[in-house]
Amino acid sequence: MSDEKTIFKKIIDKEIPADIVFEDDLCLAFRDVNPQAPTHVLVIPKQEIPSVADLADSDAALAGHLLLVARDVAKQLELDSGFRLVVNNGPGAGQTVDHLHIHILGGRSLVWPPG
Image (cartoon, rainbow, N blue to C red; front, side, top):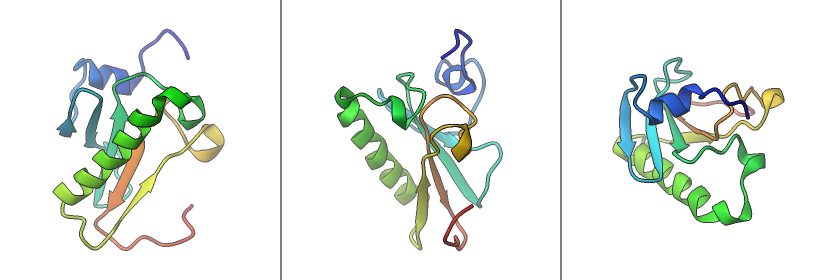
């Protein structure tokens, strides 16, 4: 990880604005500025963890919390007909920000397989 702050760290530190839909002591959820579905929200930990591959065993409670927050945010946003959670790991999978994040996608029919 470089010494320069990621865009997500700048959002956490309130240095740049974001359309925040949820925040607690451990994480933040905000609308994606380049949405890939009518509803596209990112859930990020406030702890700087570059990717899923960088999660430590000691991060198990945080990882579970992120999933529960994603569930609750999807409910809050009334994604009753369904939603998709996506976590990209590394550049080959499409991860463009080196900060763990979960995409919540919904508001339209989503095809399978993705990509």
